[in-house]
Length: 478
Ligand code: FCB
Image (cartoon, rainbow, N blue to C red; front, side, top):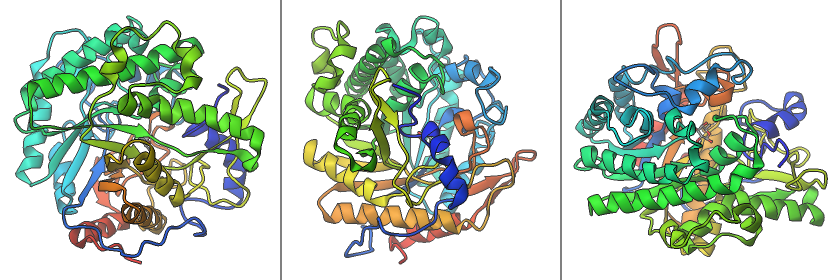
């Protein structure tokens, strides 16, 4: 695949010309909006915010934490846009009580955070680091004390470097180590931590980390792709089994970056590229989990990778599917690229977010409804959705009406999906506090809360109050 931007960065770069000419932030026309019949969410709907360890914790050399692939990647000049790093981030390892207070202050019922594998197992081997687990134990207790349900993601892209040194996800052994890690977590926290999200957006980690080189571990080798995809699916299946074997009362789910893949210009030859991307981006993760199969398009990539019994292991019951949605992907056929897939601009005149992606709430409806129709109507949670300020190093926009508009429109799509029969039980906004946005450093700000990077002082934005009101009565304002 050519530098693709199927979900994130490069697509933004491609479309930046039009973004600069017209739009900034996440506001615009409303031609793609859904109109639900009712604006009322049910009482037991889960309202939360989502974060990830590497983007927030800082304290990288504390309490026996081992390095992750992102520790090395972020230090290489050119990898992070503003030359920043996550050594402090939102300092949430030390200031987690303040984060919990902010979540409680907004009246939210849930918090999705991720556990850093290399805090728990510093080299990725079998040795457990009690101090690392203690941190999450304290965080879980602090959340429960305020009546907030913890949702822990086990893998949000920060593989222990010790495992990367042995081949990372391209090495089948990593899947087994992942199950050991899941076991260590549930062993210590399972009495209080009941909600698990196994992987976060495995497609992004696989493609941006191993083919495009824009994320850690920074590899550009399409030959790794089949192995990485399958071993992540395998690790997920093994981890789900390990959790359930340890305890019977857990809610076990996983989170995927699902995107409608659309042919540029609606042209039929671009449809071939769109279908190819759909196979890799959506079906390569949904099919194994729900059906125990891989899409045909993956045959070549997977040659020699799948072993006997694997397809049984990757197919596991899920208590909920986590859906992360930001934008649809547009692609075109490119015969000169090995994958034949190339990124394309959104339609002319489309509203664009800060990444240059199409702001299209109907894509969220389409995604949820597709999962309902094609994958047996599982229970779902939107585990990420949100938008960034226009990119830049200046201060955050505190009166962030564009974010409120974006959230409102996507929540209309959630309501419409529920009315169409999708069993969507919750919504986690990305994210609580402006944080380290991977290769974009601090130039991208997604928070409901701003942070002064010198002092760490947190300041809620207008969207924080808006979200609080919504979580309070479940009524989506018009
Ligand atoms: C998602 C990631 C999350 C954050 C948001 C903006 O793809 O899961 O960590 O980067 O995008």
